Image (cartoon, rainbow, N blue to C red; front, side, top):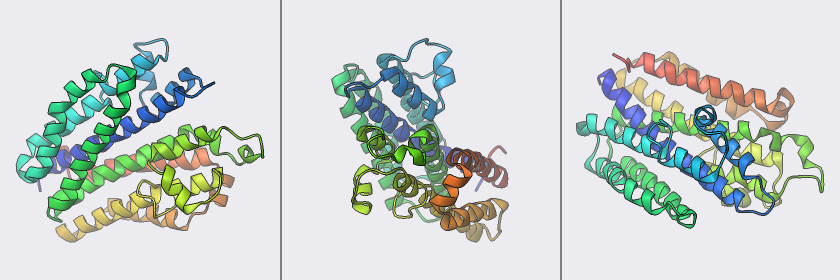
Length: 313
């Protein structure tokens, strides 16, 4: 496969994953500011920081107002990480490689792009936003379902898998890193913890609120939340689950092209680390330091994949 084709497929999947992640972050922020005694400014600052857009937002705005934050993360075409920009970029990459993807994948993505502007205009009213967030998640799921159910298990599949799970791992780690102060062990003091709605923000951001209750049938506890979102292989958005998929995709490319790569070795090393890690060691080392190193390593892996498969050639 040509490097340009691999690049477009990788970023097509990555942008669609990012669009869903931004919608999830917005929904969680919106839920929180509706609660009594919650600071909208603090929550929106946290949301923008998680999305990596806080500096760009502050270049244009001085206050963290709900309407401006929602517009910036949802509709602003000058923000490359807005939902609108991500879906447009994903469609542009898919169109460039129309013959490499299936009809179902293209129709799922193209229809999302066509409908987005109209739905976004209808959602200018705050009470309409939840329906728009649901729609964005549904369109992402439709695209993902089309990919998994129609694409051949060849290099096209492996590059789209890499884009999806590199982005998902980055998003999960950033959510935890921004909220890490909530997960510090001293916050588990009886009667002195944060409101349960605050604990739930971390789990809702990675679509794990209900599944956490299935695994841990007790109150929210920081060690359990961190363990679930970082190390539990049952959670599809945990760091460990993401690297199971990344390592499998790189192994598939290695077999398909009959050549091992340094990227595969790096991914295998990260997966081994996550498989053997425990929360006691991670907290002793420092949760923030662990997540910071993970985010940096995940970014380096993405760059190594690009170099290995000549994305820029």
